[in-house]
Length: 267
Ligand SMILES: [Zn+2]
Image (cartoon, rainbow, N blue to C red; front, side, top):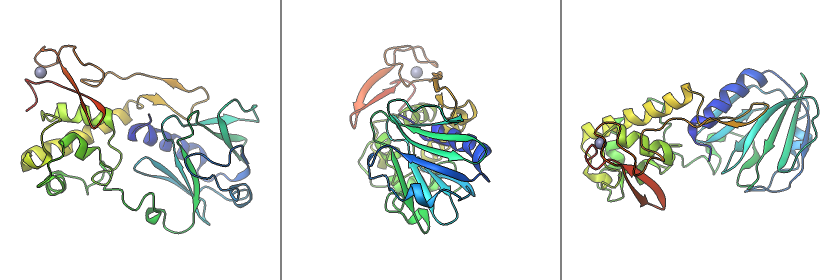
């Protein structure tokens, strides 16, 4: 599933290629993904210029001047940047053609993605309005996290994966950040002290920035979409030795999600 680094890597690539370019044609092959795909995209967008491409949580926001194109990759979506008019394949649901010959193609086998249109401030869109601060922004720090965690019995891993608390921290990076901050994922959030919250906020930022710097777990928006498995410290390594103390890593389920940690190094 695309997580924040994948979306940010996509955003940066698309920003380089598409800002300042004008849409010439939009081809819509499905009427609905997770939400209806507005038919008006095919008439509104041609002639419009992409002014900027922003990100909020895992949403990509294309500023088209008269409104915003909102894109979410869902579970299995990705955006391919192609040239010319290659024939669509199965699950290629939308094509956005640009005046310079580029084609942005939305592919999504499971159709949990979102492609929609919004006029007005996109941050006020019902899907985006309740999203917490961006983890890479100054608004997310130890003090904020301590306030959000205070009095909460929920496991700290579930707290940081709640997008109302902080935007876009998915399962992989929650596991990695908690290991880095030496905090057990199943600790009740309210038991964290201010220092631990500062360490955890810094760890979240660090693992996300590192992944973005390495190009995230896969490269989207490439002509061929390839998966580049990263080396994770704990995620996907249940039963394997801890990189610090060599004891076997524990794997449990928390909120239905695989959770890997070291009983010796994390408390
Ligand atoms: Zn260990």
